[in-house]
Image (cartoon, rainbow, N blue to C red):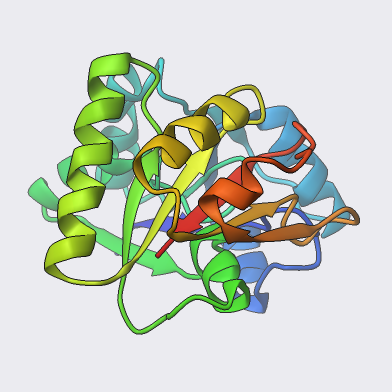
Length: 222
């Protein structure tokens, strides 16, 4: 019976991959990769040679019928993102939805996640958390999210987790300072890499720091 495998890959350190993920990637008939060049580096490290096809936000919908045809013919396919667990702020959700609708098996292969890695090392409460994805680029959406976070924290205390790029992190920190100056915040940068860094403190104090605008950021607020 064919299956679509959702395979988590390392978020930085290439050793952070499970034995099962290596096994599955070596067995499937096709690997759908967000960036084939990046995935090729990972496969090369573990001596895996399998057909690769690009699968990203710009071609996901066009690829779905092709993938469904292969699955129906009995092929096994794996989906990987550039880093971490696919479909979390990455392509794959629409494909998974259609595969389920067609009553084809979907198998999660868990592994690295910047959400959990940053949370467990943050020092903030881990019993309840809410992941809100990437901080929006548009001003209106930014204010909507900030209002949502404000209400969420007042109704049910939980650690808020969001992603931000190095190009917008200072602007986002400024907006958080305007709305939540006295909340505790943690900025996790370059997780599992050589220059891994955690910046902790009150939002207003962290806003005064010189934060390096390099590497993807995971921001936690409580």
